[in-house]
Image (cartoon, rainbow, N blue to C red; front, side, top):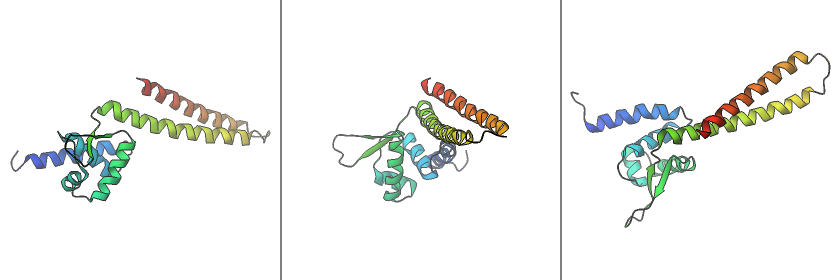
Length: 156
């Protein structure tokens, strides 16, 4: 551990864990902010977050709003503190799986609906569309299976 400091190690954790969090559709800034808050013992103000991550308060405000809307951070109240304080939602697996599964469900449902609209259009043409119609049915079934699988995951 030559030359390592707690600050260096914390920064390495933030960098590596943020890469994982980004896979759930967060921007790099949102992922880094989430990990920073997750590692903190106490809730943080926007000023503290901005200073710790070397970003502007405006940037922190934008990221915190997005994380809050996704239920990944919570605004907390502390007696005697007038500024808004935020902390990470610490139920990692449950929080991220719920967030991720809902995004997939929404996207899959939209695609399925669009494909079903195309299916209705295809029914106008009664000749030489059986192969295309069969493939389209398989694609729609695929989306239904995805939706079913993710709904099952969301209920666990």
